[in-house]
Figure 1: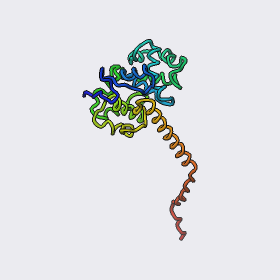
Figure 2: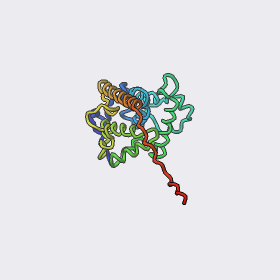
Figure 3: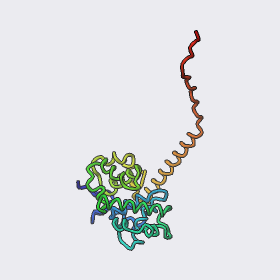
Figure 4: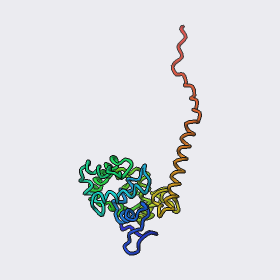
Length: 232
């Protein structure tokens, strides 16, 4: 199946979308033209600011002396040497060692399952559900991360197999500001960040309320056993 790559922010000249996720032109340009960079950026997007996570692929490529990331090269890298690329100051992530390991695991999976071609994960997906299943199977991609990346593919890369919005859940909704899929510039980045902060505060309040709620009294256990016979 051929997927459309047209989107609102697309460059008419070459079909490559114009992204403003990393808020850094060279990093965003790499994300737009490199499927592997986009996947790695999504993988790194946890416990760090979104723009830091999505700048990571460009920083990694520079440290590897390349203009793009190559799944085969990363998969074959010495784990120690690859970890050093992440841990050298400035570190590429809040947890550089563990994230370096996850990036290598992702690339090894892509080599084994997709011949090292990251775009093959979504290129021929027949439905949104099939694409979601493929993303869920990627190392380091849980259910939420898979749905967010599916929404990113649909909203900004024009990868829209039938049912993609439904498969992406709330992240696929039009006009929302829930995730990186909705970032098109500084203003939308601020709105997404505000949404995340509200959601975090609401979850914390709900957890606190649950702890303070009085425990339900347990019903007394029913007595079991036979009634002793009366001696004759």
